[in-house]
Length: 269
Image 1: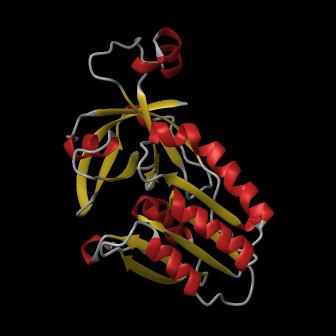
Image 2: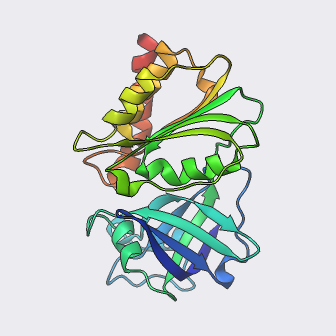
């Protein structure tokens, strides 16, 4: 379902991450479900292209050639406050690179953002013995939402890779959480997370896993968790949010094939 929100305020919450808070009547019918990884498809019109009004993404795709379609980018709902009617979305910003990050950095109160959704598939299982959540900064909004949702006493190990100490963020939780910030310090993206999970002493009992972020990192951890640690597939939410060297258009077009290839390789091992 399509929605739109107006920018209420923005806040730099880390050197490379900005929070955009949306509000307004365009969110009247918006609601998230039980998933802590709720996500929306943000819609960015292309400059110089006129789209049908009232705006309809499906109609735009039917009436225009593909190279003139609006661009879409997938982002996690960091928080939805139905009482205040405020939607928080946190953007990783790499200067002028990309579409969504630069838009967020330039956003001002009153700007309109259209989006579709939400979707989602994961939430912490209160019946599990312990939780493992790991990823890079792109996964932090979903990880933070999950940590906030943990019930009192729920055990969790959280491993988050960022550039350095300035990128650390604070999150409140009723759970028993060991939050470890891993500093990239010039190493390849994802390497610190892979190494940290590999060295982790797994507590006794059933684990529920949430691992998201750069695709190569996710591929390595999926194999390690399934083959070396014996975590059942149904106990894992694990997927690449992005792939180094590819924009979202390129990554999304190849993501299904990539995942199928990874699954086949690991089935043979």
